[in-house]
Image (cartoon, rainbow, N blue to C red; front, side, top):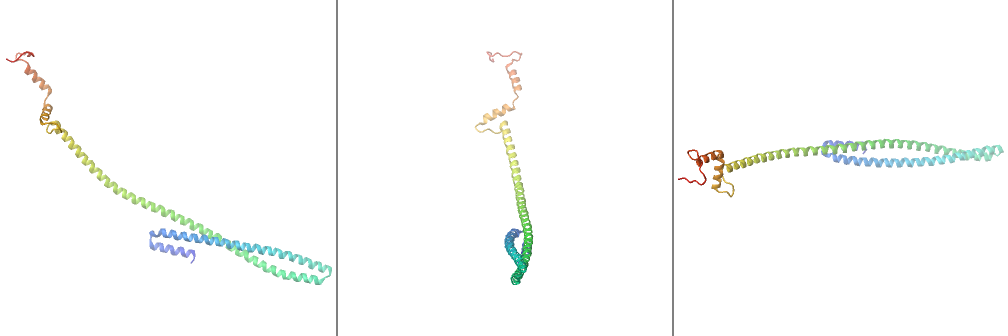
Amino acid sequence: MSIGKRIARIVRGWRRGGASDVAALKASLDDIHRTQLDQLQNMRRSVADIATSRKRVELRLAGLRQQLDELDANARKAVDDGDDDLARSALTRKVALEKSEADLSERHGALEAEESKLESIAVELQTQIEDLRLRKDTLSARYTAATARTEITSASRGISSQMGEVGQAIAAAERHTRELEARADAVDELVADGVITRPGEDDADAFDRRLASLSDPTEVDRQLDALVTRPNGDRRGPDQVQE
C-alpha cells in the first residue's frame, strides 16, 4: 500500500472515530515518517550503487578507447610498413573492441538516466518527508495546545464553581460573625446597665454599679450640700452633732 493511501485510510478512520483518536493518528504519522525515512535511505544507497557502477563503466570505457587508439595507430603503422596482415589483425581487434565500447556506452547512458531518475525521486521524497514532518509537528503542537486549553478551561470552570461555594461560605461566616458581635455588644450593655453580672460578680455589686451608672454626680453633690447645711444658711461643722 502506498504512503498516500495509508494516510488517506488513517484520516478516514480518524474522522469516523472522532477527535479522541488524534493520538492514534499522530502515532500512525510517526510510523509513516519512519517508513519514508527508511525508503529515502534505501533510495540514496541505490543511487550510490548506480553511481559506483557508472564510474566503473566510465573507467572501462576510458581503457577501451585508449586501446582503440593504440590499435588504430598500429594499423596505420602496419599499412605504412606494407604489412597488410598485421594491419588487418589490428583492425580486427579494433572492430571487436568498438562493439564492446558501444555496448558500454549504451550501458553508461542507461546508468546515467537511472541515476538521474532516482536522484529526482529522492529529492521529491525528501520534500514529501519534510512536508509530512512539518505537518505532523504542527498537528502535534496544535493538539498539545488544544489539550492544554481544554484542561485550563475545565480547571477554570471548577475554580469558578468552587469560588462560588467559597463565597457563600464566607458570606455565611460574615453574617454569623456580625451576629456574635451584636450579641457580645448587647451583653456588654446589659452588664454595664447592671441587668446581668459579670463572672465572679455578686448581685449587690451589680446593683451598686447599676445605681452608680444611673446617678448624677452633680445632683448628688448638690443634695449632700443641702443636707450638711443648716436651715439658716450656716454649714454644720464636723464637730457638731444634731441635737
